[in-house]
Image (cartoon, rainbow, N blue to C red):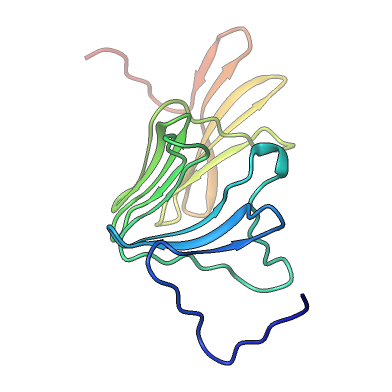
Length: 171
């Protein structure tokens, strides 16, 4: 009983565990066959979650010599950070977003929500851009060129379209 102070390392052989909790329901150990290290909660779900709390500190760093994988449950992909490569986001083990050297790839639908307004802006690195606006009168597409916005297409709620400039259809 009481506190114990160590002035050196705690050395344990392979497969030996540091067990914490009155039911030994938290373990830290090393598995020698493959160099795998574990920090694991062995409690059943009724005993709670495993939390990493640094709310009074600064950043939390997770470092790996290769990849980092976060699984929401056993066998289900969630987030994969590939060493010297991409970051992949999954929904129910289905890849939805992947970063690439050119930007990112989205698999499936992309919902762009303008928040309290209804505008969606897409800008380019050179300062150009496109804006989509929806209001009670219809839908407007504008482009940004030479420090000004220009309306290029308006689609009314009744389906009528108005083009600014010439429109070519077919070949």
